[in-house]
Image (cartoon, rainbow, N blue to C red):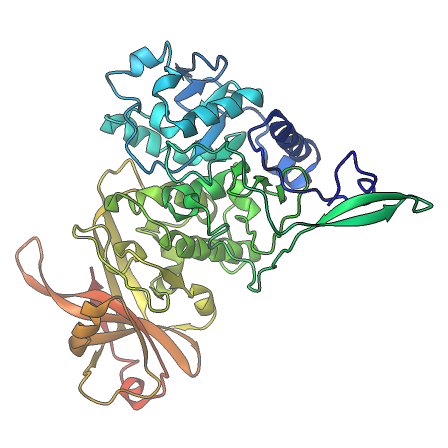
Length: 515
């Protein structure tokens, strides 16, 4: 890797990583990456709004670094940046009903944690007046304001001109502009260059390790603190452009490419993006089975897997924290959203399972119906793509969820019911199971309850395999106090449908309610 003042520079195009990520030089290089995206990336130009978007309700005015203030936009249009970061600790400076008026005059920099001060500085240096920061732009002690702003979260990141991602900051007080440590793996070599090879430059060789696995949404940069946080997933994927302050350098990401600022080498093997149709302002409805329909569903299943690896500090926010990205997918799929699943692929979506030896745990308070992946904490995998072809073994009679607040279609749910017309096969764990039976139980308690379980076949992808749910019976009272049999999902199974245990039962369909 050469430097501009080195004789090797015209011949070696990559450079060493930028380490002084907050310096004028680094931010100037970042601006060059942004300009290239805006003016030369055909795909990014096509996906950009034709006019300035409507601004969020409130923004931080970064015009004067000594006197940042909170501005109410009153429906104006314009450009703004957004910040994605890890809270990690309490924020006493956050906007509340008691200080929102004072903040419209000045937010004293002395009360702001380092990450937020750094973000205001970067926005200012890049020449942007407005910056959206959740702790300041949402009135944190107002349920009404939170509800309103959560409903607009899709727009905040989708229409931000650029998102600043404080990937390396473990807490809001850490900041993200410190100099990065130099790599000790660079090895300098002389490089004869020029027509007569009389000039000798210097190149630095760095060891890089390409990923052996294929592209995946999961864990774009697993070592970064921000990639462990649930809320930050949708901020990462919904942003059309992002400046990522990573642990090793400064990185720029858009819908065309991801690159290290300053042209340092970056391995993009594991880089994935949402299908471009998600970013269209009015995407045409997807036709079931069409290429774009399949691509969008596959993207959703990958998002679920990535999201399940992350932590949401408040358990009840499990669905809320991915609500914005669900909203974006709904605009393309035109399908009903059911606590993390989609009606038009419901039988396939139900076939999620725990990943490997992961222990799934349920929150103490109800968060989602048992058939939803949102009902558990822990890593799940979704193999729904394996069931896009084949034969359904069950029919959805009805599926309903009760929202905590009707205004948040992608928010908390207080109840849910799934009624299937399906085979119901009682399973006795004391008898010898068919050799083909494979099970994935949610947790140890569910495994213990497997002695009193039923199998509900859902899908047959080919002649020799089927998949479905493992359920156990629970007591429930209907509103009119009549007793009824209902079930709870405790796992997933796969088996050969030709085994004697199943063959006779697959045509005997009954109504099964799972809550």
